[in-house]
Image (spheres, rainbow, N blue to C red):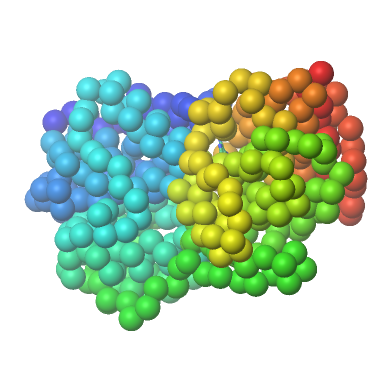
Length: 373
Ligand SMILES: C[S@@+](CC[C@H](N)C(=O)[O-])C[C@H]1O[C@@H](n2cnc3c(N)ncnc32)[C@H](O)[C@@H]1O
């Protein structure tokens, strides 16, 4: 057994942005592990499932403090998976296997440790999946920072478990303990919505950005598709979410091959399903900032970048996508970006990609075109 504080203090966020105000574990991780400690001490590793672990604090903390192996883990973001693998290798812990959010993850699980997601949609999908496949007497330890928790979360868990109890807060974090699954009669996700204004049916899993709706920034960027680089052969929707931009591009440009890529498992599942629902042929790729695409291989990138790192406002995620754009664009290639005007990314794009022009501005958003010289 190892000392938990030492394990947690040694974790890194890489390949996500690293900065003095960004942390690889938080008070909620520690509180979840402490609250579940007696249950974990009596459990076998194969009975334990971890969901939403950011960088491995829950998985590696449980493994190290209780000598558990064979834990099943689901992380929506591929960057979280990479960080967990790297942290595990660094600590010399070989204790877990990554699984999708389905029966392979949860079959027969008796203990679930989880960081509460920010959206109720994602929590609903997770809670329903646990209730559908875990052992009937499963115990769920779901924690978060007070500022990101809402009473509605108790309601979502209450629809899937017989008891839900909020524990005492510590260091502005809290754990909800839910027990005894109520098997759902139906599952909420994926959801499909018809958006007539863009003539698309959009399919969304719980964790995807904007659900099955059309984000206002995305709508603004989409209105420029007709003026984007003519004759582009290789096109990327970077951070594709449900793949709306990829689908509109695939429909508007019959010569181009369109790749929709995102680090989120829910996003790529949604984008694949959205393309299929609309009879469109696009390539969907779960990847961190196009890391598997070659240098100088793309003619056109569209991007509605994230403006936070997990729960913290930080520009690291967006800057990483811009730097990746510079790497994969061919000379003469274009990167089209939409952002909330107050973020003023034009200078950042100019430095990261190349000369950047404002192509449109409305009350809230700016659309820019960056050209690779
Ligand atoms: C603001 S959402 C935009 C989603 C979609 N393009 C739309 O307009 O509805 C940003 C997306 O970027 C993705 N993302 C963030 N960092 C990423 C990274 N390093 N690599 C790939 N995708 C990333 C997020 O998962 C999220 O789906």
